[in-house]
Image (cartoon, rainbow, N blue to C red; front, side):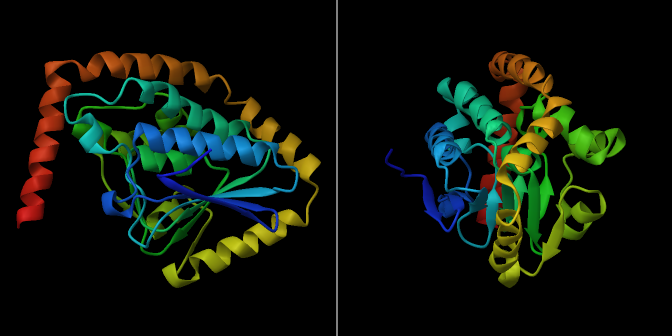
Length: 256
């Protein structure tokens, strides 16, 4: 598979997937999601791969969710429904640990990606948050239900109901990430965690990951319902109003 939106490498037992759209703060398009799925499937079948690392290119953003240029008419490419859900499924289905190296903004759909990863290691410059209600969208599947398992009901509701942004230290304190390090040390720290994982039994880790997932696998049903519901919602006047309002505000912020 030829990749345009991501960088994909396999070396010394580590598969690295880098969302390579720094000009768009690593926001994803349908094509980006399709490529991430392809890389994850390849890593899943590669016997020499022991751990997967997901990162954003550059030092500004991990991922800022869906690219507004693809959704400016009210909704995303209809193929995105499938690939969006498939990325979430693959992050959980792949029998190898997935580490999110959060090098900057992790917002909206990008925030959900890191939440679903098994481990999150963040740079001290990283920022976290949801944006759905601000832009006329939502994720009532893993984005909400699983987030509540990670940080608790009260905090998860706060994250979604207010669309606030949180520092890396705040994310650490609420259990949203596993460790925070200076940005300059992020890749070195992730490498150290990968080295530890590679010393452990891959078969044992495989079954442990499946065991952890078993208790929340029912959220996949919520995810399917959520994507169908949000597709209908995107066509509503309310969703279009908030999408237009967000884009206008973004243009205004750029001009000042």
